[in-house]
Amino acid sequence: MDVITISRQLGSLGFQVGQAVAAKLNYRLVWRDLINQAAIRSGAPEIALAMIDELNLLGLTPSTDQFNAYFRVVGQVIQELAAAGGIVIVGRAGQVVLRDEPRALHVRVIASLDVRMQRISSYRGISPEAARAQIEASDRTRKSYLRRAYQANWEDTSLYDLILNTSRMSLTTAAEIISHAAMQPFVKEAISIQAGEED
Amino acid sequence: MSLKQPQAPSFVHPAEEMFARVMDYYGVRWIYEPRTFDLEWDANGKVTLAFTPDFYLSDQDLYVELTTLRPQLSTKKNKKMRLMAELYPDINIKLMKRREMRDLMVKYGLYDQAEHIQGTQAQKKAP
Image (cartoon, rainbow over all chains, first blue to last red; front, side, top):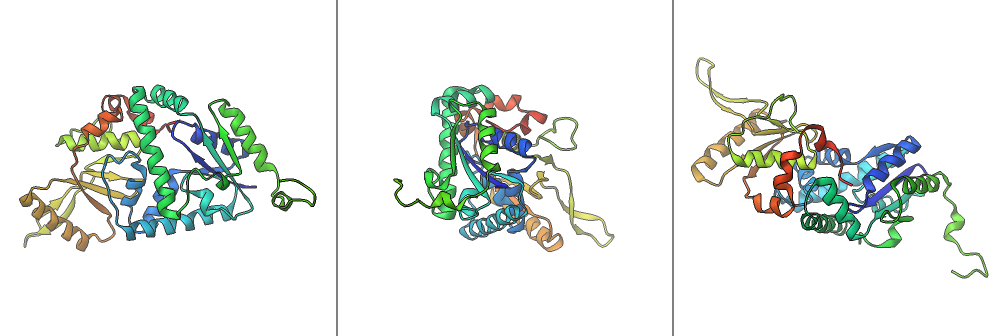
């Protein structure tokens, strides 16, 4: 599978895991470029700011038409990237857009709230309370993005092939597991149950 | 992180500095007042009206102008925006209301921390 989508929680190390996977497999990593490109192509580059502003500091409120145009283009860009292959897509609901793409491996990276708070607090040099506030705002924004754009639930485990908890796993191990899974071919047998087997 | 500006720019208004800090926090590259657009000229060709947007965000190809709600300033700015759209239709500009974001920045721990986010540090991705 030469397309990997990574959905991640703030503080889960999901972005870093994506970086490590991309480096290991020599794939291209796409993240912020996707937002910028889609916003520019949709004719409303300011949407990129609204998307980037997870904490809603800027108070931007793009119109429904702008949002819909942006979402459509994001979907197109993701499909184009997937068609080219050799790519790790971080965020932007790649797991939903490419839900039926057999060449795609959908990964979710999570961690416990305590661990996420510790990481954000330490990395950004802020208090645990501020870290928690950032995490809660980020979770709200990301959950809302999937719901608004695709009527999907961010936490729906059926959207993912792999869910990795980095509270108890190193970044390297997580990247190795994903890389190993990506090297396996898509098998149709995986979706059928042989006669006589229990599910 | 400012682009092509070797030293920190002198912001005219505190809201501009706040905006720059927020951009730094998100790792969005910016330039402060990089370009002036001529909008009106007299009979001799001398520029009589010009517009310098506050920021240019290169990755988004977007100019940002922070604005107040004061009516007299608003009218003048709206005229400039109208002329910009007529004379430079390919330039993307977002007129953004100045927002009191200090409380939010404090809530998220960004206000003090923003002092320390500079240059390449701002490009690092959070875990």
